[in-house]
Image 1 (cartoon, one colour):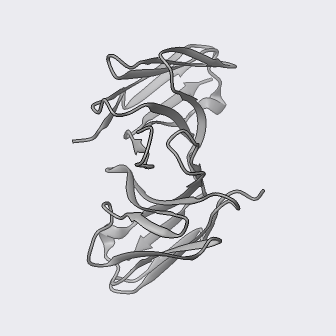
Image 2 (tube, chains in turn green, red):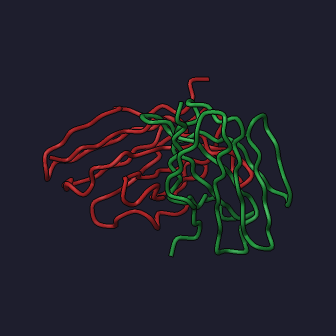
Image 3 (cartoon, rainbow over the protein chains, first blue to last red):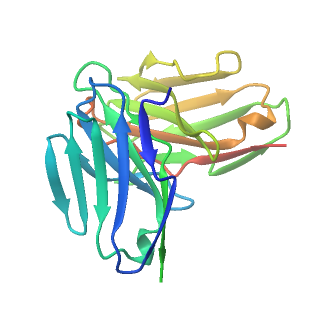
Amino acid sequence: QQKVQQSPESLSVPEGGMASLNCTSSDRNFQYFWWYRQHSGEGPKALMSIFSDGDKKEGRFTAHLNKASLHVSLHIRDSQPSDSALYFCAASEPTGYQNFYFGKGTSLTVIP
Amino acid sequence: NAGVIQTPRHKVTGKGQEATLWCEPISGHSAVFWYRQTIVQGLEFLTYFRNQAPIDDSGMPKERFSAQMPNQSHSTLKIQSTQPQDSAVYLCASSFWGGAYEQYFGPGTRLTVL
């Protein structure tokens, strides 16, 4: 069973709109959560991390974490065509084991 | 800082041939990871090294895949007797040690097995 589940699988939003991506984990050992973005033909690149409950805002991107429900979300306001990409959620444990567990990704298309 | 370097960017092999993929991590990073990406399976963890020592290879197909890190400046992923189902993008990432540190990915090597 995949430890990190993402929804939706794909999402289309109009330029200037709000995109909301969701991620749920099944392991309460996870403490660190990341959002990665991958444009076609490139490797994934970290967008932002969130380690504490609540919201974290970086420009047009806001991540929200609720550790009690093991849910993390990413909201992109004023979406731009350049935001069209594959978005991954990743989770890791705080100590010892280094590995990141990635979800299968959400494909975002921003329609001009 | 050139980032994580992966070579070659594209590789085509015939069924049964060997493929060796190279990764140069970011200088100073102590952890190196290998992933495989396909449309169907998404991003799959293969293996990782800490300070050149293999730590976890639980994602590696046991029979034909092997990874090494002979020095701190490069790691290799070798696939023997390649099969069509090995066709994928193979990604290398590096980071400082610890789950709170970002993994920096290379551009990947697209392997096509005919």
